[in-house]
Structure formats: C-alpha cells, structure tokens
Picture 1: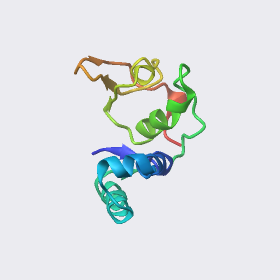
Picture 2 (picture 1 turned 60 degrees about the horizontal axis):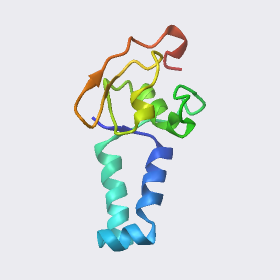
Picture 3 (picture 1 turned 120 degrees about the horizontal axis):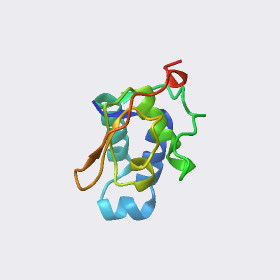
Length: 115
C-alpha cells in the first residue's frame, strides 16, 4: 500500500493546484478535490511522528518523504530522486530507482524504532 503523510499530501495538492499545471492537465478544482480524497482512500496516511528526523543529509527537503517511509514501515521506496536513493544505512527499506535497480540497506538501528 502506498504511504504518505499530511505534509506530503498537502505539498502534492499545492503543486498540482498551480494554475499552469491545472491548465495543462485540463482539470478543475472539483477534480483536484476528488483526487485528494482518492489518494487519502488509497494510501496509508501516517501521522508524521518522524518529521524532525534528519536522515537524508544531501537534501533536507527529502526528509519528510523518508520520515513517512520509515513511519509507515515500507519495504520499498520508489523514487527518481538521487538523494533519496543514496540515503544511508539508517533507512530500512530497499530503494528502487527509475531504472528498476534496487539497493538494499540493513534494518533501522534501535534508535529509530517507532515512537
């Protein structure tokens, strides 16, 4: 099941709601609201307990994504973002890049257990 957090979902909707994107996608605000509801139904929305976690040192803006993945205990993180794909051993998931290649990492240390 896909995992997201309120912060990630809000950012997604904010980006899609940009006038240029809405025009290009030929969508209106009612359709955007329906998409928002659909994502909330189809994904596990974690609370965001790990928002202060700093585990993607190359790009701190990616920390909320890594935090949601850690909180949701996902087995895989699929991304085209090189910073997320090159995260360190503190992340217990396997990263899958755009080319389909995967890189495994050991389980999270005890200090990163769920709150």
